[in-house]
Image (cartoon, rainbow, N blue to C red; front, side, top):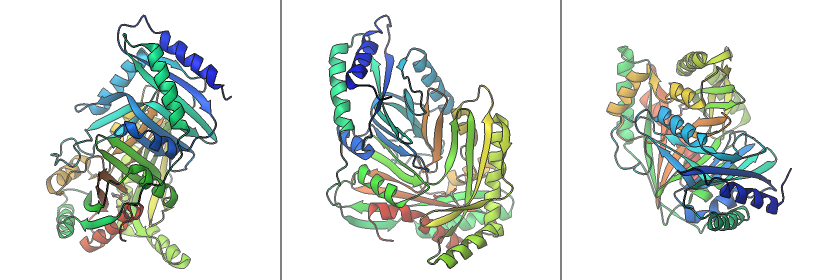
Length: 462
Ligand SMILES: C=C(O[C@@H]1C=C(C(=O)O)C=C[C@H]1O)C(=O)O
């Protein structure tokens, strides 16, 4: 049911006034259902909140979240998953929540992510992105199938004037929901540079040496590319391109400070809805063919290629074990199938189960990250290899990004096929799994193809 605006305003006003007895700041969250809204227009209309916006669309495109402004931000360094969960629970304990719909992703929702490896020395690139950061947006748009919801999440301090606050937020949200996407002024690409390509091949070769001497089983190695622009590159237009071009992918943009982390990743880490868990093993890659028959032949070869099947199996075994530790009714198919994307095709095995009592989504994220699709196997040894030899900081690349709500629903994807936008520059990331038989030149070529989705969205040269 869609409420009238005046009914929603009345509800909001009551919620704001009804919390006087509390001595500390309190979260007030009020949700309503709307007619459809232009989600990218909503994001763009929130430009005064630049640095505190997020855009998220799930791979099946039936679910979009757009957050503008921060009601509350959690950051944590030590015990980052546990601390985030604890801060979230504390905040919800005192919250006033008016949400008659209880649809996943409405009401108080936290969005954000975690860095790949808190033990890696920082190099300044990721100064705006701490080891963990999630925030509850003040203005949250949720598209769920055909339906659209708006949640206002407000942190009310004991001395706040509710009348004033009410006037500000009712005006602001109407501005956001009436936003229409506008193409930005043309921004030209002025440079495109691969960073340390020769070193990448040397490190792949070093990794295969380590694997041959049984120090590790698999390690995922990555490299960077820098694209420069004639002016600041805005996130909204990159998101629009990614949405248009990259099917079967999560499209995301997380702003923080002066930077924005954007991408189109096909890889789900974990989704929980009504206690049902889904995770994904995605590893093993070939390009798409230029003709249907070439494409089919490449896919068929991938399904039977020993090296790629081995890379994939490291991931399946680890995820199966982790999910079995926190779920009942675990189901893992015997063999992978193909997952076709615009530029690439991967080996794909879905994993499902029913979450055991008392296990939260963040517990599962902590268990799973990093899977051998992004770290390696064994976990600690491969992480140590990456820490020591990879010549840059991954930041949030290859890490969990996503959302969770107060009904124990949520989803995290693995942030690959991504780039960090920093004003007139973008740093792109691309990696690949290395096993005993990996060839440095081939791995280099594979990472070149994995850059393509972002290069294309940014207007660079293929
Ligand atoms: C590391 C990346 O991708 C990962 C590595 C893959 C592989 O090596 O085959 C496939 C999918 C992803 O799990 C990346 O795209 O940067």
